[in-house]
Image 1 (cartoon, rainbow, N blue to C red):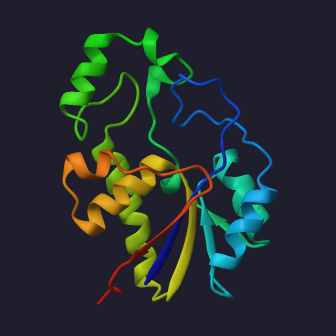
Image 2: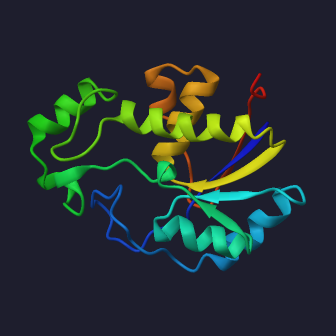
Length: 175
């Protein structure tokens, strides 16, 4: 199965602010959609995070979109909307030292994010779709690539996933 991993456009939020599940809008998605549409084979179904920065791009790409909360970005809990430099340094260090299992206060660990997005892709594999487009977030894309390409922690955390980018992931169909 071909999985076109599409990151949402630039969000309308100040630089240096922690946002994950925070539902912020984005720049005009139509120019980004115009660049992405030709990269998707005809008839590719589009699935999207329900967060508006992804939802708006998905709807600009295709008139029929299926939304699934499992494609939402990581939930940073109490950190959401806070400047990164105002978050307790000891907590940030604890997160950096155990990025998969550390849970931000009131949030979710990266391992839970990865489990829910892998579960979503597994449900698509069971439908035997030849290709899909997922409009989502950098954390979702990184954890999917880490899982299906078996990347090490240093490899997947350093992946550069630009706003409005498309990354092709090829995975074996479900048996």
